Length: 365
Image (cartoon, rainbow, N blue to C red; front, top):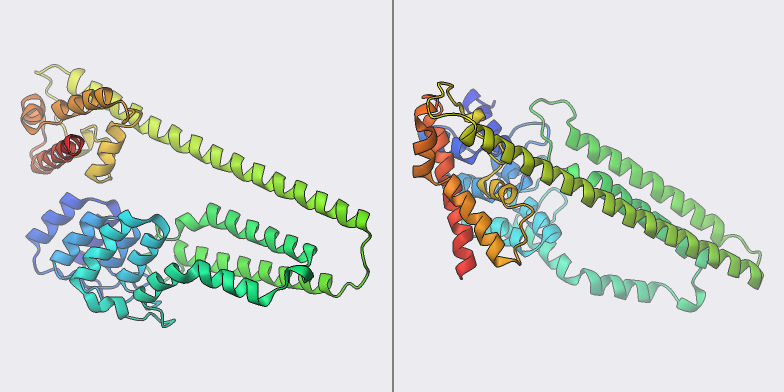
């Protein structure tokens, strides 16, 4: 049974509120971070890995989080971390796999329900391409290749890629507090049924085409190849257009966040007189990303500034450093802060200033 305090701790992790989680764990030292919740039976450490929050992961490890604790599928937090590293690269490996492996080296050999260990996942990634090449060369003869079957396989692969592109990104971002089927389980089930259906259909079509004994004329084969080529080109164009639309949407979202942040700064820091009696709560402060980490806040602040233009980038960075310097912020706003939120606001401002200073220091090295 998950206690009320543990539910509150879980909510801080979901919201990405590192400062609040740190303060809560410091105040409630009796709260255990080793518990499972929801239909997936994930622990706080699983959740921190799924949300790609390395700061919270290190904080949970510091407070005794069990790396060997498993979810419903038998996966440890290290299984999730390794999957993130395989998908996104070395940065995720350094931020998630390394601290978990250092905290509990034996977790690398802990199998899940399928008998797969994190160590296996890393090894399979290393040998995946050579193995695929070997199997394909040994099982098929180029002289006996069926063009129609190859085309069906290409179409099936395109369907898989398009589905993963559209729905796969949401697998790790939803969790459930009850025993009903949550969004993540629903997405897993729908994807599994979709793949099974498409695989069965592809096998049926391949079997029917392989059993067709009538020989095609050279003209028919040429027309079929031309049609296949045109279909492939159309799929490629549609895929490129989809990626372009997604990139434009992402850029519009980032620009909207930057514009909202700048308008909030103007209204809060410059639009009120020093004698304004309106009190400021935590939500009234124009944070660049209200529920994000300090790194995400800095990304919003500096969005649109060309990092290759060192002079312009340093100028924009200094402007933000001056705006969020703890002493200068206190001079402008400390008297107007709500007493109940004052400490939390000042702690967040300090953390934000330190992150800006870290970025500035990295430019000098």
